[in-house]
Image 1: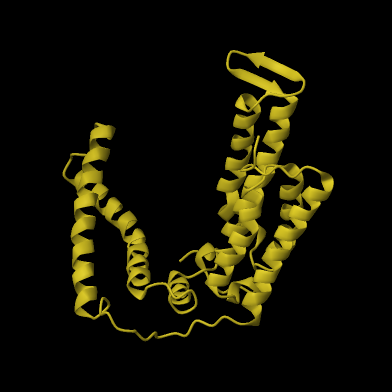
Image 2 (image 1 turned 90 degrees about the vertical axis):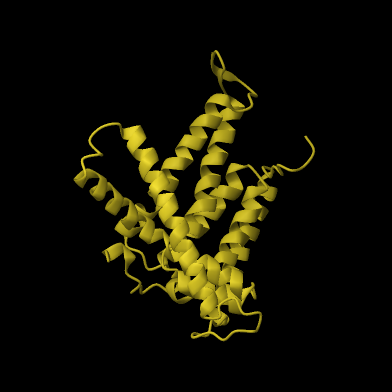
Length: 262
């Protein structure tokens, strides 16, 4: 277990029910998805930075966890800047590339929106344990227990896939069949992993059925998933961030409802 996997967090957000974190992320993301403007995304991003302070992450953990987001955001902005809808003054035009005042504005809005939507989702779920999430989805959100437990079992198998892949690679190398032909080796190992996964999944399903996981009766839970004042507080914070971001965009006149008439 690495330092990044430890759950000994001191942040207030770490102890909140995972269902509340999921709902808060949705409250922040949905309004931002419905518009494409820099004001709402920038306001939401600034307010989210205050929330990140209470997540209990060190700077190293924060950057290690969120680097894919910081990579995806500028790439998205670059694509829109080069190939987005052109309007206003044209700065560069070559073949299918057209950089204009309008495309640059859309690129800035897309860059901020990707950060504002993705960062809170990543940060809030850093300390979420899959078992805690399953308990919350079944007891708080009242999702079907059979579905929740099946998803939890499947998620627990993801780590085994990596171990199986390494074991297959070492076994093939020991037999002298992994020295050449990378593409053929990859296809062969992928097929072997698929067969192994199907067999393991069948055994796991049989074992779970034998232990009564699929019984059509109300089940009991080893741990109680609670939804109290801290969870409602996080939901209120998420709703406040969305309301302030939307209000700022409307007051600034930049609100751009993407589902509205063109």
